[in-house]
Amino acid sequence: MNTQGTVTTLRSVQPSETRRRIILFPLPFQGHINPMLQLANILHTHGCFHITIIHAEFNSPNCSNYPHFTFKSIKDRFSEIADQFVTNNDVTYYLKYLNRSCVDPFKECLIELLAEPNKGHVSCLITDATFYFTQAVSDDLNLPRMVLRTSSLGCTLAYGALPYYSKTSYFHLTKDDSDYEGLVPEYPLLKFKDIGKITTNPQGMGEFVNNMLNTMKASSGIIWNTFKELEEPELQTITRDFEIPSFTLGPFHKYFPASSSSLIQQDRTILSWLDTKPPKSTIYISFGSSTHITESEFQILANGLANIGLPFLWVIRPGMVHGSEWIESLPEKFLENTGDKGRIVKWAPQHEVLAHPATGCFWTHSGWNSTLESICEGVPMICSPYFADQPINARYVSHVWKIGVYLENGFEWVEIEMAIKRIMMDTEGEEMHERIRCLKEKLNISLDEGGSSHQSLMKLVDYISLF
Image 1 (cartoon, helix red, strand yellow):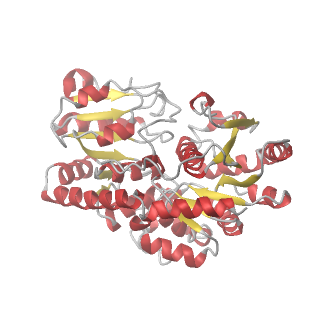
Image 2: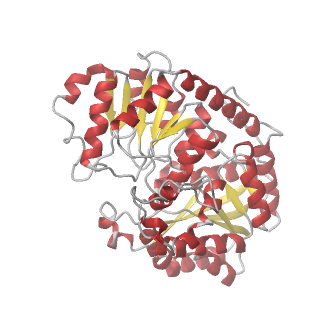
Image 3: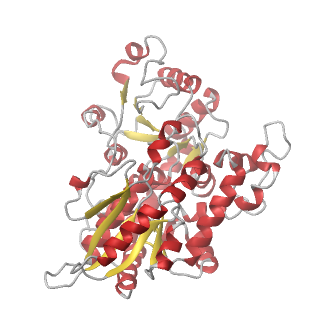
């Protein structure tokens, strides 16, 4: 175990061992591809399994980065609707589309893989939980299916309340409604206004969640990218409600030295720029690989960063701002006025940025991978969630773990400035740093031999070996 809590060795692979095969199928979005490939690496290295990845054509992974895996591409027809990705923010539309378009290509590919001569026994199929159609396919082929849930335990429990509320008016509340700030009875951590952020299509989301949860319960087991000490009460509820094995062996990315399966080229020059900044002085802003913001939000954010007087590193993906190619909507003389105080890049090596001593705060969209990475490096968060699990993660960060601030009213600069000052300048920020430092320590212990994540991995390897 090294000083950063990365697991270096769990089990030595003996040349004489007969390796079983595992077939994995990730959802073709960055936040789902990354943890699935990380899980594949963990099982290959520590479980002595041969790995085959079935993947969609859309957002195809770079196979050359994984010469020890076999990759099989299937037609997904996503290109037929991909041009709607920026303008249509109904995530369930894309998920339900993929669950229809991938059925036949996936089943044909799986049948071919199972029929391959002299390739060894296929122990099981591991699919993203959102690919709910794969349960019926695996049942038809008599192949055990496990699922990888790339969101938190808390998110899965909160989703359990959505099918009911999708049939009510609560998804459409406005600030003028008396229930807007009210708590959701079935999941009191959430406010009704959070439910409205989760999806723009309540009925579609309710149907999708029902399908996902039902097929998760019908699977042979669930793999979670989290650790027990972070979500212990939620794990107890999951264990009671889902009568199948659950394995909490995360965070996945900590099993190996920093590496990337990013679909966007990283700008590593900013690491030397960070070297010039004082400890905990710099705000890191990144809203993930699929979030989009309006030009108005973009300019509010830019003007605020220019006025706050703190160093900042801002990730702006090409096309992230509606109606812009990249940064042409920046306020006049923004770059000139900020000078060396700020840096804008198209993509950053996030693990290393968060681990850098100069980084004092992470302004994030609250995707689960980013949330875990921030906890791993002990960096408090400002949360600007947009959809799906993000509002749920933000509530946990601000109200349960108390390691960040949730910007509940969007891009209102007064609230943003107060959040930055709370974390970067006030005593409250020091308390957040201490709480997240304690979580980081628990996380590292969980990965060490005998820790909860280490034990869960060993149980998962043994469980798969029984198939």
